[in-house]
Structure formats: C-alpha cells, structure tokens
Image 1 (tube, rainbow, N blue to C red):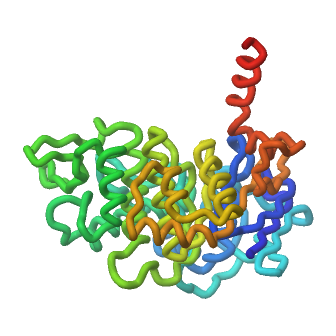
Image 2: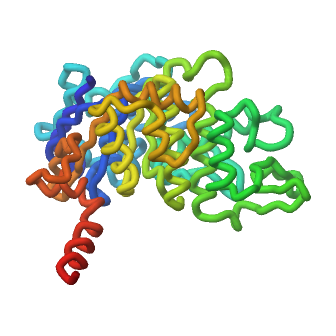
Length: 377
C-alpha cells in the first residue's frame, strides 16, 4: 500500500495518506484535496509534465515559484515553503522545489487526471486545445482538455454514427444505464455548423441539441465519458499502457443520484480492470457505496448483493466486476479546516470522532434532521 506524507503544502498542515485500490478524499472546499491529488500527479509524472509545458512554450526558467504558478495555477507559487514543507513518497523524502528545478527523464504517463473543472474542456461543444487557456490556468485542466481534443480528432475520428452509444465502447449494461439516466434517449454525435465540428445530442429523427442547451449533468459528464472511453479500451488489453492511477474529482457534479450510481459503477469497472482510483467528493452517496462494500467484504457476500445496491440486474459481466471488488482495498481520508488530514477508512457510524461518524461532514445535515424530527416525534 503506497503512503504519501505531506507537511505544510498549501492548506495542508499534515497528511499521512494511505492509498488503496480505491482512495476517497472528503472535506470542505479549499482544504487541500485537489492540491494533494495534483501533487501525486507531479511526483509520479514529473518528466511528462515538464515535457508538456515545454511543448506548449511555457518557460519557468528553472524557478520553482514560476513552475508552481504554471502547474497548480496562478497564485500558487507559495505552495512550497523551504525549511517548512516536506514530502515523503515511495519511501523517500522529496524536496518539491528541487524536483522541478531541472529537467527530468520523460517516461510514460502514469496518472490520468480528470479535474473538477472538466466542463471548461468544451467550448461550444468541442474540446479546447492546451493553448486556448490562460498561462495561469491549472495544468490538470489544460492537459485534460488537450487529451479530449486529441481523442476526438484521432481515436474517434473514424467513428461513424454516434460517439455514444457504441457497441465496442463500454459494456452493454453500462450503455443502457447511461442512456436512461444521463442521456435521456439522446445519442452523442459529431455535427458540423458552418464547417465547424461540434458535439451534439441527437435523435434518429434528426433533432439535435447543441452544447448550450444540454443539462448541467450532461455537460459535466460528457468530458468524463470521453476520458473513460480512452481508459477502457475495447481490445483484449484491459488498461492503457503505463497508466496506473486514475484521478476523478467530484464525479457527482450536476448529476441526479441515479446518474451518480451509474458513474460509480463505472468506477468499479476501472478497479476491475486493474487501475487504482482516487476520488474527491462532496457526495454522501460515494461514501455510502464505500461503507456498503466494506460491510459486504466482511460478510463474504456473494457478488449479486453488491449489484443490488445499484439496483441493477445480475449478469455474468457485472458479476465478474462485483467479484473482483470484493478483493479491493478502500481508504477514506478527511481534510479538515485546520489542515489536518485524518484517516476515516473504518467509516464507523458509532465512532467518537465526528469526522468519522459523520463521514467527513457529508452526513452531518441528515444526522441533525433525524435528531430534530425524532425528538419532536
């Protein structure tokens, strides 16, 4: 099990983060969840990140402060404080300022990062290139957007008909759920308006909906879907070469609870394929799933019991996914306002520590509502 230790990194005062097969970060806004995820990406893919920045003409002149403003985003140059900040990763202490000062060897990318701001990846329904952003926009946002642009221009270029659904993309059970819970009967298609390509939601009768009239959930989910397409090849190889970690920030944004359940099933598919997944979330539904899986693991439940949580019918394909999840480790970490990161992986509702019993505050409102109503009754 990998261990990431952070001290005085941005808002994070101290964090000892154990990374399982599935790792979940919870906590209020601006407590360092995204910083921790971006730092993991930088530590594992230093050479790749530097090479991408060089490719698009970004020069930090070997100055760490400049680099941090480019990578984490404008105003983040003070994220590392010499003499106060420290990082331990892979059993070694790493000086982040020294790490980025000189060029590192370029190896294959190991962390695929899907940022919370993924809706920015589409402008008028088409992925934006890396250079379409301001130089102070976070690297994770720019790089994800550029990946989508390459995908629709190359890997999906020869696709005839719809980008969704496709027989060779995702299991049929997932396609059916997405069609019902997110796409509402529409297909995702490539259209042209005055020679400009764009993604639209269309029906067989020719009716189509451009980007600006998509629902909030559809706008948030479609960039995520395209990323999942790439991570889940239809070939005999179940994962993309070199990619070991998949980061998804706030997968629940804009989605109805049924849509969130479907996306969580796709997360289980990623785990089944062999990726290690990191999620940041503000949705209690994500921790409901984590708690239920842990309980089913302890009880040695049959795979069909896990599928009942998602209200989906058992199939041989989904049964294999559920069976593999029974062997996966799940860790949960709470980022509090004081900058301390706590391990709440037990998810014990009777724990003395409110950060665990209330699951990082995600169950706090429900708990208060139940208490008030029960007293009244």
